[in-house]
Image (cartoon, rainbow, N blue to C red; front, side, top):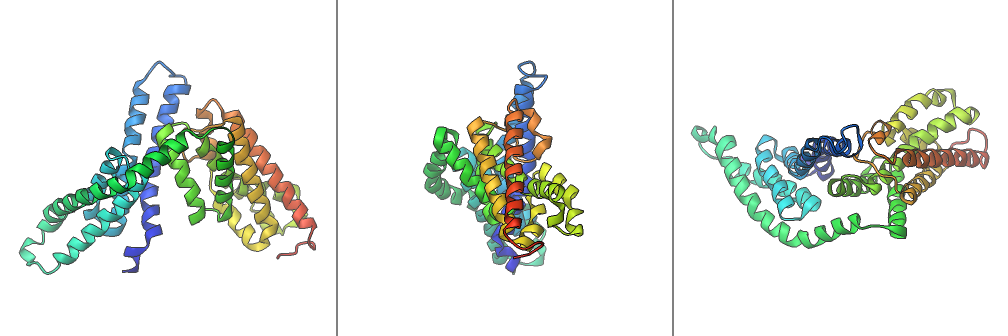
Length: 333
């Protein structure tokens, strides 16, 4: 029963199924805009836009699936589609997925005592029909409540510029490095996803990505340059951290943060904030929310992204050395 109310698990399930669509759609649009096929094959751009239009239905569908299994998929798809057309967007799809999933769970309970002779009708007729019907009615209320705020949020993200863009990027950069893949990190990641779904080539997503790549890369650089400050077992983790960082997987930094506490955590937070700041200042952007170094060359601003990534990584590694010098050799706080 506890799993049914594990909200974080359900959100992450929806996000994991949504992300491939955002990546594929964004990259197709980028190829059509910047690649060898730029302005020659607009079909890729159309396909990319179509793929992105499915992101909210898939998000809601697999949140509902995580709650109610297969019977939740159809109501969840409808919830996400209505969130898109009703302009409640990400928040509408998120809450709509929960509404669809728990609606189906309620239906399962209500029909749990029905005769066995109609059991086969439940998954194929009763749950989809009543689930879609009730969810569509619930979405009327959700869209009415959420659409004003959601439209404002999307427009605010799209229109960010100047100092406000830089400050927002720095805040997101700090959030990305605070818990390295945890709930706080995901808040920044969600904002980046919203920006890329609606702008297709996002500075904020670039800030989020660079600040998520810096922690493991900074640790890999520190392990390489300052080997004596770490144990031999830790030194052997430098290549693993480098690959995780290049692939935008922040979790490689977690064991070092747990071991060295502020001596590692403070530098990577500062490095991530500075990296995000440089992204915003240079107007670097990316077309997809995941992939790290492997997708940045689909945009014309890739060199700006690399400057921000290298600068933040170097500052974080140097700060780590300074923090180590402030304590006894190999001291773990």
